[in-house]
Length: 224
Image 1: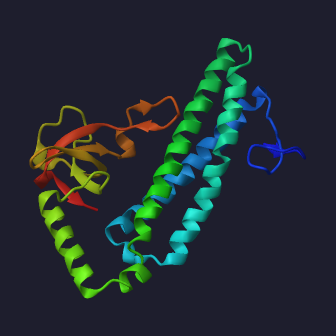
Image 2 (image 1 turned 60 degrees about the horizontal axis):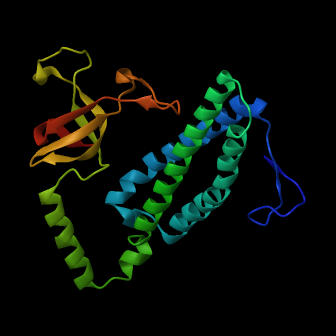
Image 3 (image 1 turned 180 degrees about the vertical axis):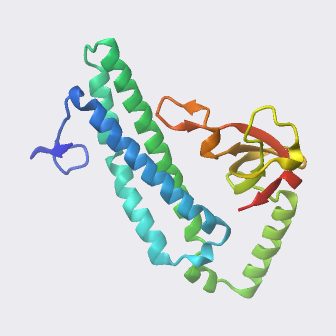
C-alpha cells in the first residue's frame, strides 16, 4: 500500500488502496509477516524464564519495531473492510475472508510480542542490577514457590511423549515431541498442543497448521 500526499489516519498521507485483484499477493505478504512474528516469539520465549539475559536496548528495539508494526495494522484491516464492502463473486469473497483471517492472526501475534516485551523489560540486566538484595531474594522465593505449584506454566515450550502413529498404545515407546503448554487441567496434569509438523491435522482459515492436543501427566512432559 503506497501513500499519497493527503492526510491519512496516522498523519503520514492517505494510502493508495490496493484493488481486490491483488488479494492473493496481499495474503501472501501478511502470512509471510505472520511467520516472521512467530519466529520472533519462538526466539523470545526462552527469555521469559531468564529475562536478565537481555539488555534494555534490545527490549526497547523490539518494542520500537513492533510498535511501528502495530501502528500500521489499521492499513491491513481497512483494506479487507474495503474489499468486503464490494460486490464480489463467491470465489473472490472467499479469498478476501482468508485475507481478513490472516490479518487477524497477524495482529494477534503483534499484541503477544509487545506484551512479552513489556514483561521482559522488568527483568533486563539493568533492571536486575538496580534491585536490592532483598527484592531479588523475595522474587527468587516467589518464583520457586510458583514453580513448585506449577512446573509447566501456560505457553511453556516443552517436549511431550506422544505417538507418531494413531492407535499406538505402547506409551513407553512414544517419542519425545515438541509441544507447548495450553494450561493445567487438573493437579499434576496438563493440556499440551503437540507442534510436530509430522502430526499436522490440516490448516485453519488463515492457512496456519492445526496440531493435535493431548493431556499428559508430569512424567510425560519435560522442559525444552
